Structures are given as structure tokens and as C-alpha cells.
Image (cartoon, rainbow, N blue to C red; front, side, top):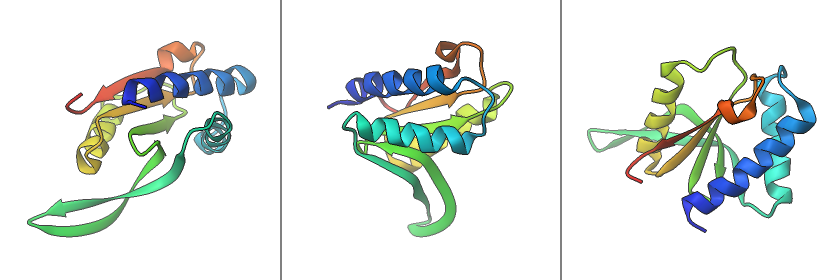
Amino acid sequence: MNENEISYLVRKCIFNVYNSLGPGLLESVYQKILIYELKENGLDVKPEVAIPVMYDNKRFDLNFRIDILVEDKVILELKSVKNLEEIHYKQLQTYLKLSDKRLGLLINFNTTNILDGIKRVVNKL
């Protein structure tokens, strides 16, 4: 599957989780349930994937973590906040660059309309 096909399936899973749980819960709750839903839909999922930082040809393990990596291609960065801020987009862009991935979804579950809470962020796509 390519990134767009994965994204389509991920969005279906996000809708299922949101429609069942609604807004207002902690990010950790959505993460656990979304991981379950993604796996139930046949996707390979890795939670809390460490991202090293390369600088001056040296590797630094600085505890940056991807919330969820799907099919080793798409990064999911989960939030449960009043409003997505510019820094949330920048964080995901940096994770895409550091991990050399091409697509990320920034997902804010704390919204009255989940369609408004899903944002695509790309890196060389």
C-alpha cells in the first residue's frame, strides 16, 4: 500500500474511534483505542517509535517519539487539545524529516467535528 491508501484506512479507523468515544478524553486513551482499531483493520502498527537525531554524522537518541507509525510509512501524531497550534504542525514536519517518512496525520480528537481535527502534513510527497 502507498501512503494515500494507508491514510484512507487510517481515517476510517479514526472515525470509528471518534464516533464511539467522542471528544474530551486524554490523548493516551485515544492512542490505545486507535492502535487496537488499526490492528483490527489489518494494519501494521508501532506505537511510541523512537526517532534519533543525526547531527555532524553522529546519532543522538533524545527521546523524540512518534505516537503511532502505520505500515512503516505514515506517522500519526495524536492530540487532545482545544486548538491545534502552529508548533504541532512543525513538530510533525520535523518528525517526518528526521524519520525520512513522507506523510503524517496530525489528529486532534478534542473537536466537535473530527473532519476538522485531521490534518495532512507531507514531506516530499
